[in-house]
Image (cartoon, rainbow, N blue to C red; front, side):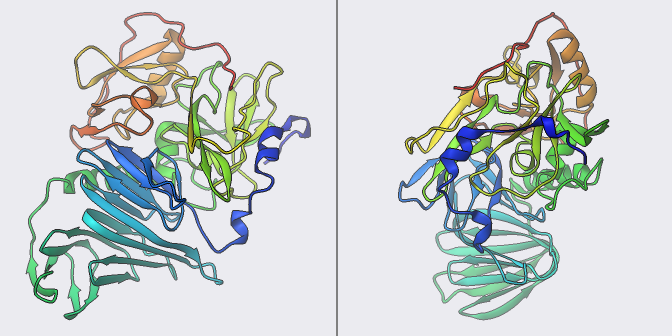
Length: 440
């Protein structure tokens, strides 16, 4: 892809602030994505500070713990699209996220309490293990399973593939549509059963998979060395071939006054410094790879290319207008997460749980995954009228976006993602947020 040299503009304050941090790529450690946060979810980032509020798109490293409260749900997304999902009253630990010398990825998850869903893509040579109580599951090929740990027993139910559980009572093979129950009081003795019953959150887990499968296979997908974030980019925006730049991506609902650093947070990690964490539901790959360019007649667009960035992502900005105020990280260590709220978000209309108003320049903030069809068409209406009204079939019910706390929303689902069509109207004209926004 071509880049006019005159466009290159790096953010100097970020480079200075992060220059003394170690290079993540020089170690055998990895980062993965906290790709969904709903309700009350806490995270212990293994920095000696204990639990803090979890936020969407926060980079996850080994040693981290996640705790979902009584309304919490969360999802971890690996580089190959493998996922770990937790539901209310669940705690997981990530003891290992590393690389072999061969390049194979090693991931281990420990379920301490509650229920977690695991969907392993089965990428060749990668290693994925699950431990709970005194049992261990080593996955070597694609599998989809649910693991639950209670006070007196634990269960493993397999939706796809087959798994082997190794524990004090020996090894047990569990095939598709079978489950094993382990008696934690009686030496973890197990019982096998077939056609196990559906549990309340199975439909949520299935719905997330359907969303990923539908949007991961559509549109342009050769932009990144990793596959995570693909579905969100394809759902919340589109690629186009821009003369002089090559293939570029832009989110829907992004007008002339929008910039990619309007909403997010600066997250501090000992040993790494501050890194930018985007609040946008698609905000993973475009902030760890490639660059953001201001393209005349188009506005801000993301351009793939370059090297993958780690925790302390340094945004690269190309061709910024003279009036643009570049984002600056805090200069000294302080609050671990410093929010930035400069752009609009989707808001509910009245008391309806399904009707929302999506303003121009919200760039998808507050729009639940797969909750609307025809986002491109709705985006055009919003740019013309300042906003668009729409009816969701998947709706956030406890706060939209930053206003109610970043990543602090809970979601109620109305059917399978992508199954219902949206209804949009432009009842009132609004100018939206069309002015440029500086970052303090």
